[in-house]
Length: 82
Image 1 (cartoon, rainbow, N blue to C red):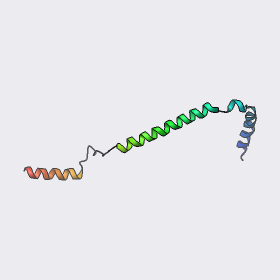
Image 2: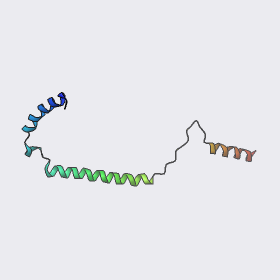
Image 3: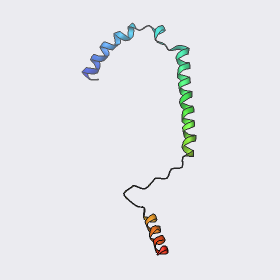
Image 4: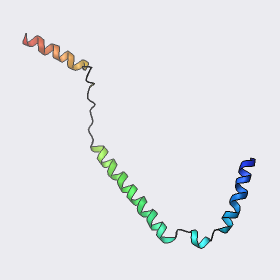
């Protein structure tokens, strides 16, 4: 261990002895809150997956560039009308 970590540990050990074990534990209420948060995250992820499966995304072409397939079709339609 380095000198810095040893110095930090010597300052933290007396603080750990001052803590009362009965006052630090989260208890049943802490478990219930943690379980509710876990269940909420699980339900949100399940809902997100369901919504993401419904997404049908097609990327729009950039405004400055015409797609190659569309420009080829455009020239064919111009030839037909002429």
